[in-house]
Length: 135
Figure (cartoon, helix red, strand yellow):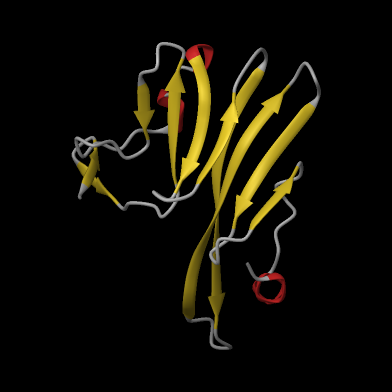
């Protein structure tokens, strides 16, 4: 399915977020009507669950109190010696921050579906490290 935002086509992502609200309605990053929703559209104050899914597997965070959702990407490019891009991949970063508890939990989903939990999103495994860890 083609998804659009402001009339422009948006490339679908392998892993996508879903926001579930207290009234059990939901907002999907890529909804069933072909619309793409931005992270900033989420009503954080009414958020009950924060989900990242590839359609089969789900990472679920129950949101309460002072917890705020986190979602961003790390786009990786490898290049040959001439500088020409030979591979592009995405790390999906998903989780929450609780300012009251001074806690941040980020699940980093790598291209091979390895999931690493961290509090520091600057901790990114290199391609060689990912291959050694495996899934």
